Length: 331
Ligand SMILES: C[S@@+](CC[C@H](N)C(=O)[O-])C[C@H]1O[C@@H](n2cnc3c(N)ncnc32)[C@H](O)[C@@H]1O
Image (cartoon, rainbow, N blue to C red):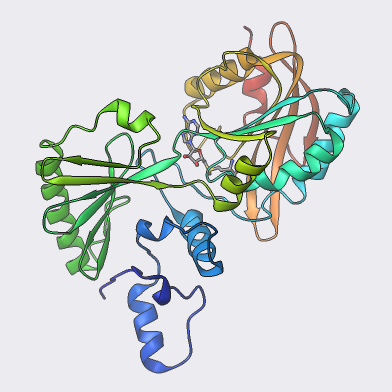
């Protein structure tokens, strides 16, 4: 069986269409879509947003961490969180709230209206390590989709969307062979280009270097981008969950990032330390994991930052899987 992958918006059907040939085309394309479809117009069309959200659910990064997030994911978590915050902070407090590792920041944008209703003077900063991918177009018109760390996620050539992460399975020999060739080609072309860090940090979306053209593709949800443009209380920025903030804040949420499946205990402890250093004494940390997607169900711990570590305030279900590690932390 071969897989092509969805490359055009009109070929994107979340549900299998009726009709034999349409269904066959759907089967040959389904399960993967070109990251070029993450590029949306402003304002975006409904199909563009649907494609963006579909891709975001399954996108795996070279770190092995998924971008997975989705609309209404924290529909049942947000009211609980606001209730916990309302017990500790005055509603007029100018709360500084951070949502770390927020992927496309859609769940942050969904949290904002209820947070701002309860705390009108609050500010919410959504962040992630990765705010854009890069399309590297080769002279022949074929292209790699790469991360800012230089790793290739996809190879796009003719009708094929070749998955370089996690790679193509051997049970699809043609895809597997194309992936091997793409990996060899990537090793060669990568040695010919040098993407300047200044361009990565700049607002410039395009760069031409020798035979190569590089284009940034935003992976921030259009609704989060819109909110950031229209409400000065909401911002989106790049930040690593292992770096402490220059100024401590009142509240930090880290959902589905500090997971045992993603990091060893020593690294998780470093993450907890970064959160501790980024919170004011008495600040609140919300940490947890989504253990079921439909309907979403989360295991979450609410901590307050003390002078020497963290104290547990409350749990949702069993609490975070790193709760013991956090409570053992001494700073
Ligand atoms: C599974 S998603 C979680 C998204 C969102 N918090 C949620 O729960 O719906 C994990 C996110 O962590 C981001 N990530 C990976 N390493 C990171 C780091 N060191 N700092 C910040 N974000 C990171 C990835 O880019 C990805 O968007």
